[in-house]
Picture 1 (tube, rainbow, N blue to C red):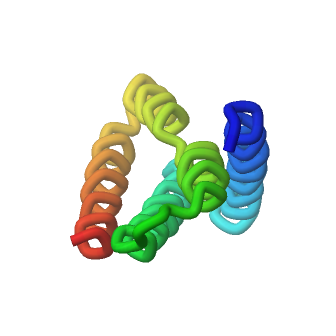
Picture 2 (cartoon, rainbow, N blue to C red):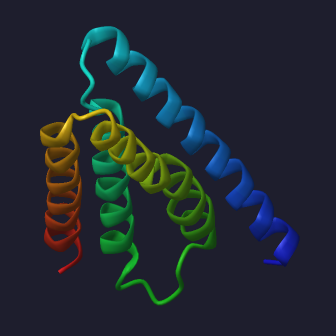
Length: 122
């Protein structure tokens, strides 16, 4: 697979991941009227789950499926997980005085994402 194909797969996967993240944010903001960034938490946990499943499934394969690696793992999961958004939202929460929400979001997102990946990859 040449670099142009790889870049194309990452580009398309990343775009779909980003649009999916936006959809989850929009849906959760309509359902729950809260300052807590539940959409970002859900997107991060789903992305970690998908990434963990893909890594687990393909770990013992003698030839790794390049489509899965570049489109799903690097592209989609990279666009769908939202660490930069996560960090930005926590800075805003803390600056606005929502300390409990900010610290809860950090703990929940990081710990649950770690546990999901730990359980799926080991």
